[in-house]
Length: 384
Length: 98
Image (cartoon, rainbow over all chains, first blue to last red; front, side, top):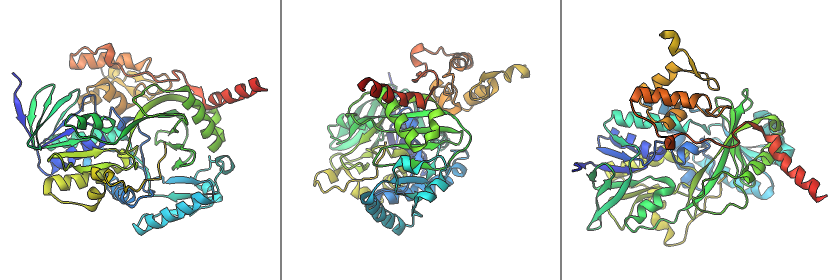
């Protein structure tokens, strides 16, 4: 017979947020068990573009991102493992007057939070990234934040998991959670492949699969899965340090510390659903757009092309916090393609809530209840 | 013996047998985790040389057979192809139209 175990917190999902939560909660001396049905970082975390950006259109996201950057800055020394965090900045192309006006508003809000960001002219664009062709980009300006950056998603996730285990957290990969047990509208435990666990708190950090986790206990999440495609080229000598993105074209690309160019773009005809096959349309659309932005890349070889999922919410902002229907059921999903960069601060806020009952304005404004009153404010700054 | 451990396992990413053994010792005991930690199989050859070797090293070290179902995915375009080649699809289609 399987032995029944007991723990303070069960985390479902071994991606960046699940592992970050395991690390922070175990640091607060809580007993933590994390269940991942595949291997760590096997979902969106391990497939993402790995960018870390503070330039958002909604205040909540900008604030979460700024505080997350401050945490990323210290993370390598905190964990004792190099997560390869670099700050080469994010350069966001501005294509017309309408975009320029929106960008000015965003920059003003971002600056009020203390984020260093400027609107730059075409000459400055080329100074920052000499590979770019401003005419090909069709850019009249750009916004640039030098403290935005990049980290290695695998190494960050593994380092967090290692430290969490050192603190006493138990991490089980290749393990399914098959049932969540609810008693009198309260979380009572979970059933897994290997044993049953009694707990009062379950965190749903299963990325795009969070919706089916919540369905186990009849909670409906409004997230929709979208296939996203991304590619990597051969290694090149260091050419530019920043991530280049455009909201109009949907493209993003950067050069990794090892020299590869990594980037993605949505294909125009993409529809939601759980499709995982890469498409030829992506290769064509990506190659056309990327070589328009950086013409010399036409001679660069592409090595690999893969897919991952965005779990997209109606306002492109995450779903956080405790459910008001079932006590102890906590959401940490719906990141709409930006979970990696927001993970540190989101995990910190949720940890404070779980360990000390500390409420926060951000959790309240990003709770699932916001979809009821339909007064949502949409995050516009989305790429990929 | 020391000479043997310096054998190159992955030429694309310049990794030796020792690098692989060290990673297994530090807890990366899944082929996909090793791949993501070391970048084995993600270079221009897409793991043709290294993945079978790493699989054998891992099986020997953990004394567990790895099923072919658990082998890391191969990704398109399988062989390196220039970005310029992918843009040429448009030109061909334009030619057809004219």
